[in-house]
Image (cartoon, rainbow, N blue to C red; front, side):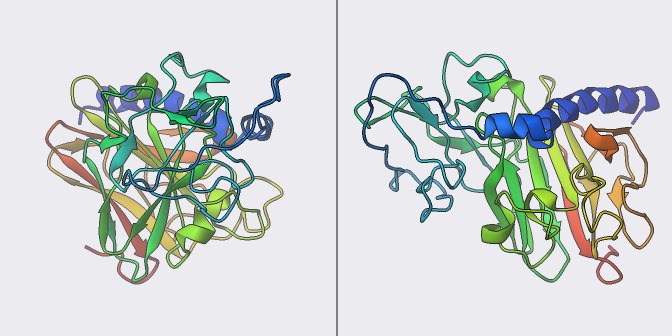
Length: 315
């Protein structure tokens, strides 16, 4: 790809990364987005049950969220929009019709509406619950163990709750331009062998997985059909008070292309790269976390390759 185009892409994706990072990694914003809605003077009773007959993916069904793609301690109560997780490769097709910009609190209002009677209302009855993403970002897992990739919930609380468990391969859910506010998808890539139950939750800095996992990724599509994919270091992983912030992970990631792509090589190989280093830096996001970006021409496909350091990193 032309250097000027790559530079332009990097700048655009940097803006997206910083926008998303304000919700994912800024502690003040995290606290705000995880706050429950204030109670009104109107007494509302009951909860809206998660629909088990719609082909959705249940998130921590035994916790208070009872399957909804919400924080485990947050039930779906009357007066709330309650997001849900779709199967791998698919995107949520329902959200608050009045939420037309990426701004709080409207950005929380994904999913179905729980009315005052504790009944579910579908915002867009003529749309399905889930629909296929663009299919332009796939995962090739060479690590020898399953990998839990966790997509953030947006519109929603932006926690990494939507699981894609990758055996040998999978398709990530990439939004097209019809998705809510044309926002990008963001993913956390857990170490091989970490389950979705342990990795797709709000964890702690005691372990390098969940929201403290080393690597993050992102993807979005433009009006012309081009897709832009990103891999990079997780800003939280390199924060000063994180005990493992100087430890190189034992797995790496890189982007490969089937077709016409620009911006390669784009990789993080801990056998070569130190913490917060990438093969070529297209920019730095929140907290100075470095990343690289690849453009994928219409009709082409990018592959996120996950490999163990010193074993299986070759083609």
